[in-house]
Image (tube, rainbow, N blue to C red; front, side, top):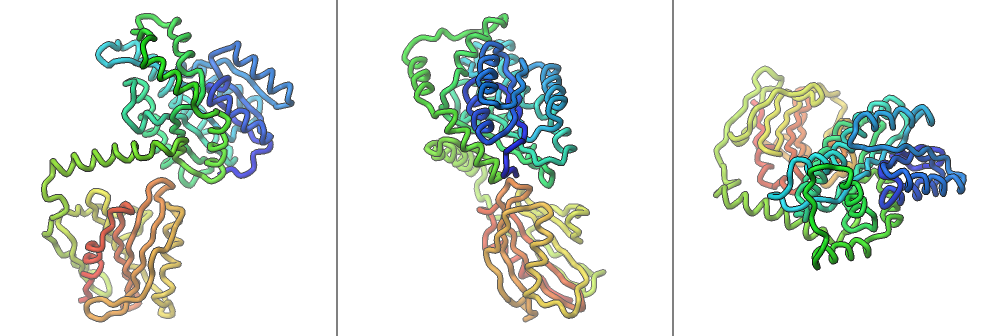
Length: 425
């Protein structure tokens, strides 16, 4: 994460107005150097002049982000000028759409080309350079609340939902590197996104255009005009960069709407699957070649998988987001059960962060063998909140650890039965 901004370099697409300009002002105020990219030469020249008059080191590059060659050029001249880039804001976008039944392919190509492929090309031409620089870096992708909730525009909402999905994948790939990732999901923020779309549409052929009339159009324009100040939103982005926050939802009043969408998904799923969660059949796994020999019982709907090198487990199985893992390792006779949670935490840090110990204490297996039960909560690769229950026992110089992990709200007490099925032979 970036804590100090002085002297660092930010590239901002769509940087001549709206959210992009708000970000530029926030970064400049903190002593950053700027690369502003925009398709609007007049607006770009104007804001670049204003920054120069304030002694901000700024490079302006006319860029159509839907053209990969132009984004490649943007990356080339940015690195030639400054040597490294610390913050990349894939921000350029247009707000356009219409009823799905009326839209030809040309509309989809235009909107996805800017809103989606502009982000893809930014990642393609900057990410590898950022990782190789070993500088502290951050990528900001601008999506929209329309990517999380039902939107008024099919192509726009689709493009913004895709940006969220790409960002979620990107943060997984960047975990453990020098590059952090955030995705902005704003509601109404004052900008020229609609007007810019109207102007740019004049340069395209065969587009379906909605007649801007009626109360719906006026209401949408009014909401945008009364939206959040881009400079206020930019301060939220700075806070997210400083604290390595992934989802930047600028308008918390829309959280109930976001939540209702996923509740509907859950409810519709249950309607299709009667008796979900009632599976009771189980099977026993016996480990005879280990010293000591032992066995566990687990539901038969778990699928046994090949252990990965990272986990160093002797057994793994999964079902949906539930994961079962068994680890056996040699342990010093001086090591005590109460010391083991700290050792577990060191292992968790390889692929997780924000680790919290929810509970930890002594317990006993069914045969009376002393054991240690520990519950952790953490974020896997910086994104998914997860809980894992660990049951540790020591026998014949070996540390046997049974682990069940799942999404934080899906780890039930009933799953403890798997842990406590551990039986030594």
